[in-house]
Amino acid sequence: MLTLAVRTAGPSDRAPVAGTLASAFATGPVADWLMPVASARLDLYLEYARALYDDAIVHGTVYTADSYVAAAVWYPHDAVADLDSVAELLVEMAGFEVAQRFGQLDAAMAAVAPAESHQHLAFLGVYPTLQRRGIGTALLRHHHHQLDQTGQAAFLVATSAGSRDLYLRHGYRVLDEVALPAGPPLWPMWRAAGER
Image 1 (tube, rainbow, N blue to C red):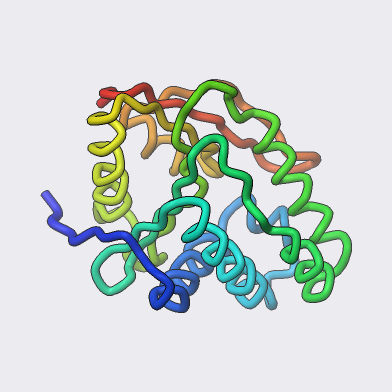
Image 2 (image 1 turned 180 degrees about the vertical axis):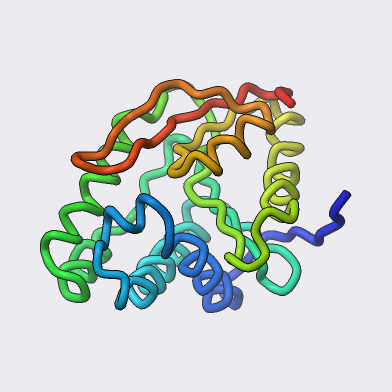
């Protein structure tokens, strides 16, 4: 079994954690849908990840692992992310159509969020060349242990079949399948406290 040091990230971890998240999410079906032209995608995702990080360390919790190989961003279900500046950034960097698609993605995810109390896994990213080695599992187990001790449920939206299958192995169940407008499917998922 993989042994990995997982810790809560702080302000000084912003650059490497944002870099890992950007790298992890710049490819895949949702990335292809959000920004069909891949050439500037990593730069856009890096700016997005920085803004997300700034918000998450205030309103949520960010975990990272050894050498910043992975990161996870969790929010309480009632947290309100303050990402207004991101919309302007998206328009400036990638144009209105891309910004509109990010808005559609946010709306689709918000529409499937359960009202009952839970922790929301907003992002779990592993550096691409290190995926499928148990690193994501280590980050999940770290926070699941805390959730189980306090009796809290977890919610997430899987954005690929591979991530959906990972979460199924960790006690999540699929609530629904939602398609983005002319885009790939998303899978809202729920894990009750103590599920394995």
